[in-house]
Image (cartoon, rainbow, N blue to C red; front, side, top):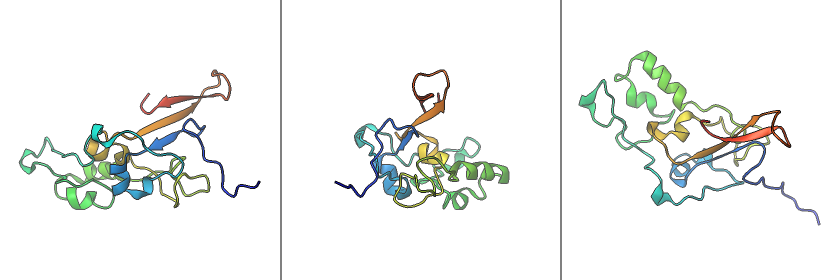
Length: 154
């Protein structure tokens, strides 16, 4: 019998995987994968919109004011507070870059093409949000396929 859909990859597929908790995908639907789902209970995860306090401007209190910092709002929030060079550095943290699972090609894991993933997608407002990423790094010394799986940051 002919099955009309491509097989879904399993959690240990060769390209690695990025999974985001629903509190983040509710705010950023572009990060929803159709092949895997985040399964940790939300009550054990940190808040998605952490406060941001600037050590150079303690008079401002929480600069984020309950908002998730994204490419769409970072300039509005931080213009006049940060120096131009700092604004540019922040722009790089909220800019999406292509990743294997989130891209504009046919092998993407999202329903729609995407510009990619930003650093602040994983580190919402500079804090952990419970998202996880399994990297695949080519290592000719490993057995089998020549690749090893490493958690993000190792």
